[in-house]
Amino acid sequence: MKKVLLMILILLVSSCQTKQVVVPAVVHNVQTTKEIVVKKAHLPIIGEVEPIYFLPMKSPFLARIDTGATTSSIDAKDVVYFERDGERWVTFKLVNRKTKEEHVFEKKIERSFKVKRMGDDERRKAVKMEVKMGKEVFNAFFSLADRESFDYQGLIGRNILTGRFIVDTSTSYTLN
Image (cartoon, rainbow, N blue to C red; front, side, top):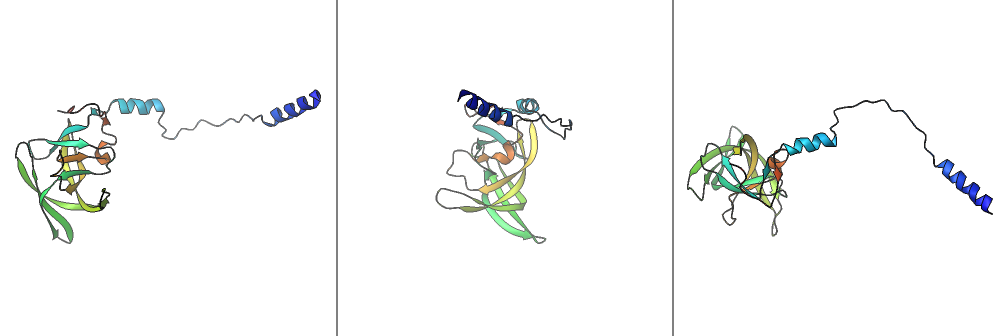
């Protein structure tokens, strides 16, 4: 009986053996984990609230950092939609609550999308804004929203965060 069990065990083990195959070393633009970690280590760390400048304005707006938001948004006032050369445009005013600085922007509407909210979904328009966060100046999409009831006039979403910043919610005001 022991010999039969031993034979069955040997047959099972031998049938599970794998063949060694030589695969040629061909690398096609592959990042190693080490390269990814090093790349991320060079990104600035920001907190849950940071200043953002909407150029050409001189004073910063405080913005809530929200990794759950797809698109960033800004508190726009006096929003008026119009058509120019067959395209949809918008004029709106940004007013900094702290400094009272204000500027009227006229921008082409880049896209329209649905924002999921607790009560109702909301349709918003997005425009491309030139902004400065820390030392970096770049263009990014912002939805125009009424943020009067929120503590912060801006909301920074993944469209800005991805590949630019690492978020540490235990801190704030890390950018100059």
